[in-house]
Length: 510
Image (cartoon, rainbow, N blue to C red; front, side, top):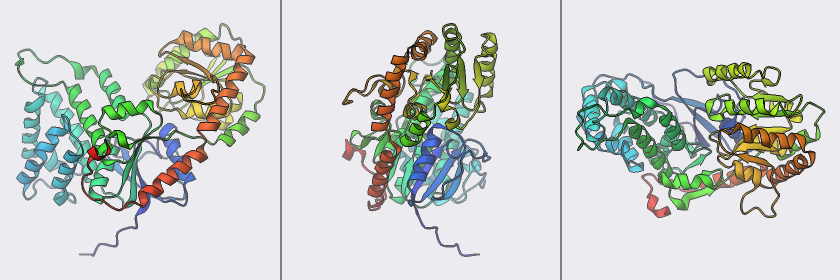
């Protein structure tokens, strides 16, 4: 047998990313790429958690200070052997923490799962953890303990999906690092919690959107999860719905992540209440906003050239961006703004069916001469011809598109989600008050969206005032260089901490 080689030297920061960089463009991926590139000579290793079994094409060229890139295929376990020694002990150790995770779990339960799996980590897989008789007995007991009023078949598939994700993360290799940084809770946050327990090195989380809220939206839209229990169910049975099962499990993962991480960072104060509701210790909460290269976008503002009146939505063509409200607003707006151009700047590949519906709507509304789908673009090539940025999203955190357009002096019309109100109208503590940088609307309100864009396109004094306000606000509060300094200082603080293996006590930070 060949002796194992030396362990690789630890990088400064291991980034744990679920379904984003370097494969998915925009949003969080752009944030990661800019942050890493601006923090040389710190070294990074990126762990990308992916849903399938193949690695997609990259959308980014990795900066030189990324020393490694590895993958965890969530919900894709190796088969492993059919039998292992002491399988009964393993499942006895897994039973209580896994039952608590599906109800109201946290870091101590994740630590218990990690400890139980540790002796088997190099060889165990789906044959034992999902397809064995002990696994069946565990599934059966968890079903009857809390979800027996639901279809067993539906619970069976939900259980397998969630547990395969859990086990995939708990068995994945952990690159050595001085700091582990996750950019969400969920499965990436679960990996951060495991890293904190097993290595003793500090972990932190930076949340853009709140993962559990996004899962709640998805689950609310999955009608089959809300079907009534079958007739004949014992009314005295304590049993939740399958929607509860999914939500409570993801809340348990988030709580474990929060209990493992110090600090817990988000982009704006509005997210902190939601984090606290999901178990984040208040004493660990911090705000570090997004940032953009202000000087770069200021140069673009100076390069504006003559063009027809133009509005643009920058974002993926997916339901959460509510492209259809944007299109209905365009149908109203073109009646009052002759020669209107409306651009959609974003990829159509994530949800092709929805993109096809949007193209059909353009034809149905007779907008073929008004609306253009440009796909994924280099934003710099288009900003000089955009008069108003429009966002009709039903969920956002702190949209980079608003910061990028704002730095270029482009006023905004956006829905009242995430931090859009603070970005456009100013935080309540803003001093001096800079004035509005555009208009904030209700969700799914094409008429209000059209009115906001119309005023900016037809009232030059109003547009100039909004342009100046949004440009100043971004320059004062969201400059990328200042944000990079804050992360550089934060990483230095965490790298200097001594290792502390074991489970941290969240009560110490409350």
